[in-house]
Each structure stands twice: as C-alpha cells, then as structure tokens.
Length: 140
Image (tube, rainbow, N blue to C red):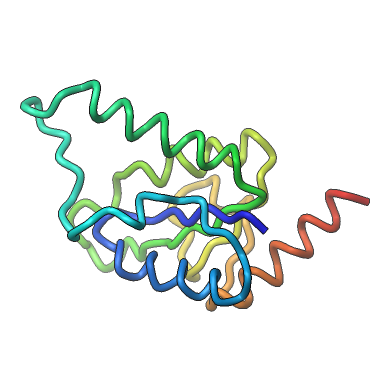
C-alpha cells in the first residue's frame, strides 16, 4: 500500500519513525518531506521565494494523490505547543478527504471537525490494519 504520512513539521522525527515502521511492514511511504535534512521548520517568511514554497506545496499534493491512504499524526490542543494549531497537515487532510483517500489518525485527539470523519488508532500497525479494512470496504 502507498501511504502518505502527514504531521506538523516539528514532529518530523515522529513522522519518520512512523514511516520506517510502515516500510518495515512492506508499504511504500510517499511523503518525501520526511527525507528533508535537519529538523528546521519550513521558512514561510516573506524573504523566502514564493516559487520555492509553491514547489513544496505542489510536490506534497502530488504525493497525496499518488497514495492509497494517509496516516496523520494528531496534536493535543491542551498541550499548547507553539505552532501546533496551524500547518499544512490540515490542508493535506482536506485534500485526501476530498479525493476519498482513506485517512486514519495516529493519536487520540481530534483537532478539527474533519477529524471526526476519520478513525483514530494508537500504533502504526493498527493504522495499517484499519486502512486495509477501509480500502477493502471501498472495493466491495
């Protein structure tokens, strides 16, 4: 299965761990943002070239559309992590849902109304099992 892993950029290490788990189970991880070097946040300040940021956005959307499913790491709003309330992962979720790509949330928090359209699980293995069920349901 081709799976896109979505998460807040500040959680790239957690997302990479999920990706490695998925690959060890024989799945393809389509989210190349996990291969970015370093752990720095993507700079969206006015000094950064809009073309460079547009490239990243188009790349991520292509990777979502090339996926069979998505796993999104959620945030607990009660933890008040700076920047956790914003991020491209919300747009990525909307793109997947709009294209009927099955999404499973890794974590028990539902940050937005759209998270209530997704199942929640606690481990990558549970996520894969639920995604396989959802894909099978869609095929029948």
